[in-house]
Length: 528
Image (cartoon, rainbow, N blue to C red; front, top):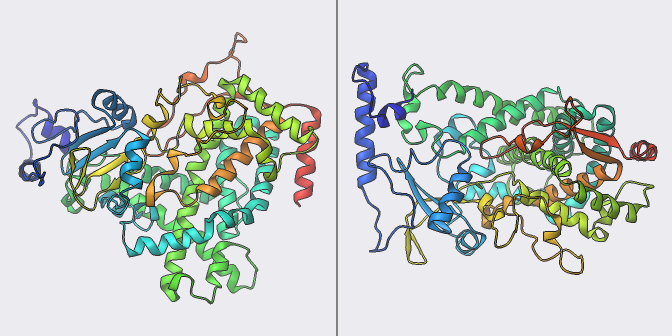
């Protein structure tokens, strides 16, 4: 039982140890002071939301898991803006694209900060661009990231994306049952090659295990209310045996993993450079730069570069992998969409080659299918919170400084007024009457305002090219049970956390024809 559980449990036994009793008294005083010190509201009401309980606010109403579902339901009850409190924090759920744009885009000057996270500090993730406050340090890191992944630079990486995706097709041919592992290997191998010039050719590579564990910890840290230390930072200084302090060992492991993520591949690239082994990579390019990119030089430039490189590595481990696995799930559940995608690909390629990046403009249905993948199961369903740096007023409601504003991507992508039958995979929703892509190009999962994902153009290209390459040569079919009936994978859900993934599910992956195998082999031979 955690300290919070003890505090809010009316049946709590009074026979507590002296340290625990003292901690509860301190917590009670802290809560009373925090919740009674009202913000200056200028006579205006807070946005609507569920009624808070005395002292603990909405802590018991907000579940630890899948909070986007709860926030979406609250949106139906209270509207586009839903205000909630947990001890020490104000939370605002933005349940529509309009609300998110009005605040996070149009008022980005005061809606671009991050709330300081004790767990992010304790697990070693504070270096990540995602978690930095809206300050000069963030600007330095973002400037370098933008230089690496700006739209006109993304084309420079296509040869690596193409080669790695062709290798991925061969793995699917050899061991189709391991498709989820292959997706992870594909995503991380692309990023490691581009960023560090490193070759990651096996799912058993230590860098994959390190990255997956570290990203799982980071995802946990982003869930509101998951760790009591976020409400009571002083807990970080208590012994691990104190109830509610088990997070300390968890954080210690996180720190070890994030340090390995930062330094192992980075130092390996530096060593190659020292030995004169040319490494075509972003790290090598920026380390060898003599123009002091962005005004940075010396150790500062190396530190920023290492942080940006690790942030890219992290993205390869987690977010793109989720989208790739969702493609397989969508194809199993939507065979008619799969056939239409394949028909369009065949029309463009003549079934004699794999698609190219330059084919994209000639594949409107494939474009629509890509957008639907990104809408159907968004990688970050609750979004990443923006924190207000000033008090604000919106539509007559007072939004206090320090409020964590979550763009509820799940609610936006489930808006029935815009996406009818939103739980179904229907690429046609992104086509106009003439069969051409409509103007609904925005992907909420990439974020909003000044905090929008810098690597979105690169991720867009990777996911699109993976989708069309896969369906050019493979059929994705339902697996069969013992009676020969299709296994219903709708019962296989997604993981929890700030970043979600499909839980492992069965499917059949088979070449569309003998010629498909030849096409894969020729593509790989051409890449060599």
